[in-house]
Amino acid sequence: MQLYSRPLSPYSAFVRGVLYLKELPFKPIVLPYPFPADFSNITPLKRVPVLITGSGETLFEAAVIAEYLEDHFPEVLVLPGSPRERALIRLLARITELEVLGPAMKLFVLLSKPEQDMPSIERLFARLHGGLNVVEARLSEQDYAMSDKATLADAWLVPVRFLMEPLKKLSGKPDLLDAYPKFDSYAAKARQHPAFERIWNEMDDGLKAFMPQLA
Image 1: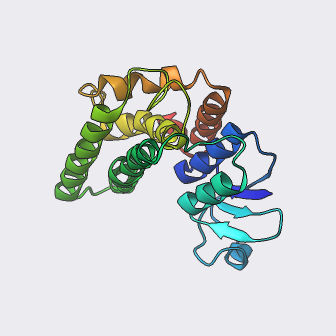
Image 2 (image 1 turned 90 degrees about the vertical axis):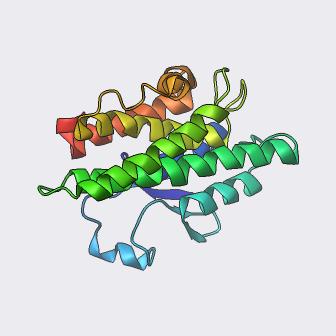
């Protein structure tokens, strides 16, 4: 398998996390900024991640790639347990992706502009805090998001938690996570897993290369 990816991309980091958790071999292809002109020959959306499967199928969209990996390589499950347990893992993963990462990515764009649209920024922070409240309420007190084992939810949470650090600096909000102690301390526990320590270090290297002022 081949994975087109970028170190700092949280969507790419999520897929790499699933691959690392499942201990699946793959060839990483790191794309520069901006994307090469011929990248549209690989994916019409021109964004990462993109997985080329062993049979030559091209898959894009992080969630779809993760579903393929879970279905095709069930030896190590990132969605274990009963239907109820799997639904709860998916729910936490989805909230993290849409309601925390979604507004955070838009905030990075708006906060980087010379003239800032404060009403839009405030609305996005309100949405971000709404998502963080849900995540905080659902996080367990154990080593990982839902239990003592890493799951799909952790594969989303680790890169999203990483991005909160540069977001604190860019926004001038060092207290951004003060109201969310479980989420704030989550990374220190999750990074005990070598897959997540690897993800964190890869993203840190990507941040130093792409946005050194926030590293």
